[in-house]
Image (tube, rainbow, N blue to C red; front, side, top):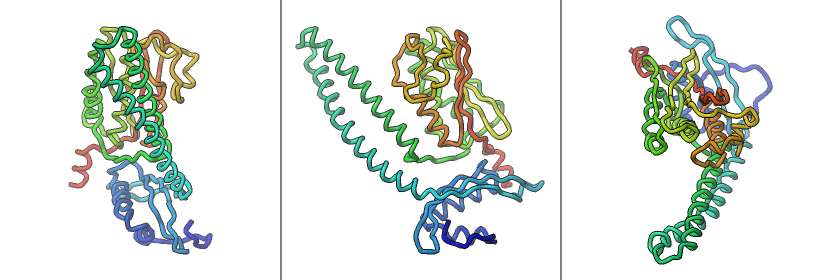
Length: 329
């Protein structure tokens, strides 16, 4: 990849790190140390290396510790290195395009909505009933369009890697509680209860809390709007050796067989949208899938028609704060 001969080579980790661009050296070294010390479940880093021709090339490394001693020392690591220079160049062009699209779409729409809101707040009482109906329709459609534009741009940023993440060992209980707090007002407005079944003990996942909460929020929103008044939506987790499944379960109508194979596709809404009490853009679940992929996780669901639905996101399990503290001690 860097222009050397096609032959077996022996090098120290220090030798390899010195090939990395100075701006990324410390981050790569920190990530490597955390993986060796089991503070993170895997190594996934992007960085530039200098080729023998003196040029800089982008690489992405995925690795995992496959064997440790009885004392926990890393003995063997397996991984891959991929040349992502072309992808990085594309992402740069994509970022420029997204900035242009965002400006050209959002700016005029924001001006139109602002004008309609001023008209609604200051002059509504002076307008005839027919004009008020047209004004309401304009505000409603404008806000729906703004939401759709934001969702499309968010999805494009995520899928092209323009959405940066900050990973850390995050307690599952905190994620579930924060998700309920963030969506309590919405659930209360639709007369649906939110219930949390916290995990026993301290269970952590290796993730960025912000996009993870975005995934849970979307699951909760869908569960609430398909639930009847007085129903309850449950949040909880299922723990495995290397993964943790965070789930949101409801007692709604479930997902029809006819739409199950495209539920996570763009605009792949279930065919029973008339049962929903709130309309949506059809992009929420596709955004969840894109976010989960970038978080090295996965999404899915279980459903029986008429018996509710459970949506879940699987994330890598991480050592808890207590385990790391005890290990260092």
